Image (tube, rainbow, N blue to C red; front, side, top):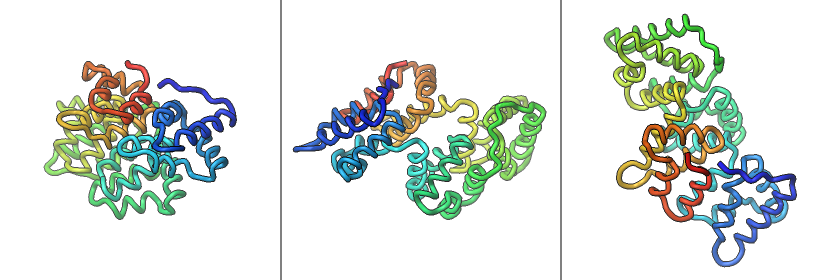
Length: 311
């Protein structure tokens, strides 16, 4: 992503002034909004929000909400937040009306990201994330999510191969080797192991004649299956995982703008370069071109500015 570097408060103030001028009069000069905001990082966007309020005594988020419409409004308002606050807001809304979305966001984040999200979640809502998960989800899906967002957290990049082999065997015994499924074992290993460890478990699982991904699909179902697969695929290759979700959002007749927006906006400052590379590798087409052909207007312009150069 091409980023314009701001220096000091003066630049943020100038941006705030330009945005105010863009809002004035009949209609909004959307090109100015896109030109400025799509090229500011999270810290710079926060500075703009503070400067705008200091000058206008008005929340710029509310002003953007009143000036913009449709998919562009959704994308810009999401973008204005820092990554952890954005994730907390998405999860809060999705736990009420889109459990698959909530599951995707929770299970694709690292333990340290989850810790920050939890802190912001309670500061913004006054409610613990675990409490909302407890009352909005059910069954093994609920047990997995609660385990995943709670200690112990493991982010050790070093893998104990003997322990990984033991886990691979345990998962085989808990699933394909027996009649019925021991869900507790799947929940324990998928929620307590580091990404590096789980990726090695998946690699060692192949000796049983099947992939761990296929075993999860065979042994589980519904949101529980989706959560396990999200954790597993993000452990193996998060770029590939999000590339698949983006492709699915644009595949066939019509575009799933909600998913498209969420992934581009939430991953731009995290790992978009890897997602673009994996998209190109798997689908033989730049993500930039796919988005350009599946969107239109100012919404398209904004997403393409976030995506930046083609792979």
